[in-house]
Image (cartoon, rainbow, N blue to C red; front, side, top):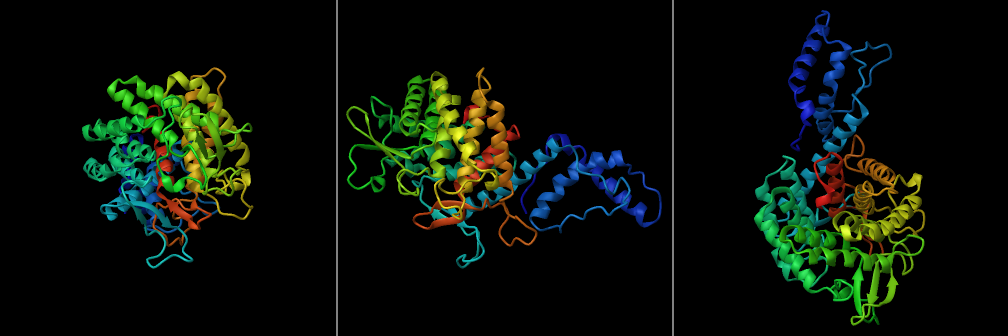
Amino acid sequence: MPRLRSPGRLSGRGAALDAAVHAWGIAVATGQPSRLTPPLAHAVRPVAAQLVEPLRACRYYGPAIQPTPGADETAAELPGPPGELDAMRHDHATALVLDRMRQASRDAGVLFPVWAPATVDGAPPGGAGGWRLGAADDWTAGFSVAALWLAAHTGLGERREAVEAMRRLQPALESASAFRGFVFQYGAALGDVLFADREAREAAVTAARRLAAAAHLVTGVIPLGEPDLVMPGSTGGLVYVDAVGPTVALLAHAADRTGDEGLRELAGRLALWTLDALVRPDGSMAQAATYDEDSGAVLSVYTAEQGLRRDSTWARSQAWGLLAAGTAAVRCPAVTGAALIHGRAVADWWIGHVRDDDGWVPQWDFDAPPDDPPDTSAAAIAAAGLLRLAAAERSSADGGSARYAAAAEATLNALLRLVTPTHDSDPRPPGMLTEGCYHRPHRLAIRAELIGGDYYLVECLLAGLGQLDLHQL
């Protein structure tokens, strides 16, 4: 059973709930008048939802019983104000997903969870929910560590667990991959932001400085450093949009902690060069670019092997572009205006192409056939980008902050419907964000749970609850 929290404004009603419910039950059972009036029932109903609904999701309670026609006002009392219940629903989902991620990190030993089957049919021995693992230098390794930091931050875990898991990331410091930005932004910098943890700060700053040392002197581009991803016959350096947002955040964090504004300036150049190269005229995103290693001139632009074809719009590349633009706009004031121009184009394209009947969750590639699988991880990443863009737009006179915040909220509500249990008889472990798609062309982790999707969902939910400041992430 997950450990659950109640928002402070509800905690004082908890003691009243027990007395009210049992007094009402005794009165009704013995034929006596009850003093539980509709206003009092209304007052204690929110905390009842706070305690019962997460346990119903874990199947400790059966389905809710609807009031019968003609029931008295107290029995028929409806839930409290929508805003309050939305906050509770987000809080419940956060607890379920964090508890699952935390347990996955514990079970992984020296490795790190990457993805888990999320369909019952065709699941391997052990059923849906069993994690596939990766090493410390896998680009996803920092996400489960981030979950431990967030669990400690929200009272659902212990800081010690996060520190111990972070120490297992140290081998990734020796990697030449640009994906180190993922690993140490979420696995280390987040711990420094939340707890001012000295070890986390040292790891984050060290990773940022090593990434900066590899940057192209003219463009600020950090080479991908993944030889297996270089296209046959390709020349020059290679950059993917995937790692840019987290790397921008990591460099900006290191600038905050060291006072070295050169790191923030590099972050801004990296973001703008990548967005200039990869955002198409209509606002869609390519994934990859090659460049001349002397001049920095762009040689080619394309969608790599994870997409449908070289000129398609892979859903996660659009989402990564949105995250890169939103992060640069929030964390690099010198380039906020230029980042917003790109961010608006990418966000407007995203919103315009995630059709209503898709429920704000796109297919894995926007050019894929209609019956191809969706990718909830792309939606969660996009929501994180939209929230950052909305935060940056709040300081812009001609911005669209409300529109982007509303799109993020609609996306999160759609994703919550895909967190297990999704129906009363769902046999899968609670807290799985289902319907992720890791690598469709390779038929890898389709309709699965992806650890990155879990993380970005929780990050967005906590930001919406006011428990994370996106200006620091």
